[in-house]
View 1 (cartoon, rainbow, N blue to C red):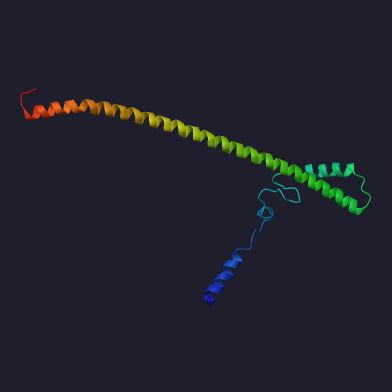
View 2: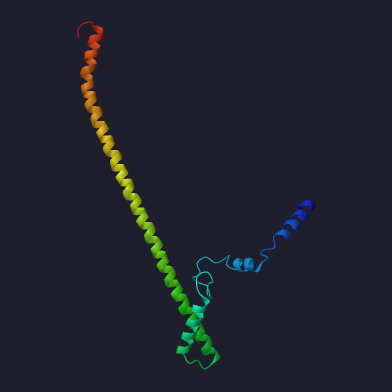
Amino acid sequence: MSSFRQIEANRRNAGLSTGPVTEEGKRKSRQNALRHGLTAETVIDALEDAEDYAAFEMAVTADYDAQSAVERELVLRLASLLWRLRRATTIESGLFKIQAKHLLQFRQRKQDHQKRQEIIDSVYRNAFTQKSTCSRMARPVAALLTLAHHRPGSL
């Protein structure tokens, strides 16, 4: 259970968060839930031009001789759906471009990794070959040094 002081503090804090105050802030906050706009019923200010949509809507309505209110609504709905299909195609193309870019970057990183690994393997093989050659030569030298150490003047 909250204390009286906590309840009062909550009320004071709630009074401070009243949302955007300016018209610009209110306009921006209307777009908070917008992620991609695929299913938006209206034109998206940030991505599309309202004048383009109005011209498109007029062109579609001019093609049909709507006689009743229902026909006019259907024609307007058709214009909206055609606009949204156009939007979906644009979004899909953009997503494919992004995916292709990521795929090319992934393949390039994979090739770079393989090249680095080949270099590391080559260096390791060369070092191992040189070590085994050195160790084969080191045995007789070590034997000679041991012999010289135990028998002074023998070398």
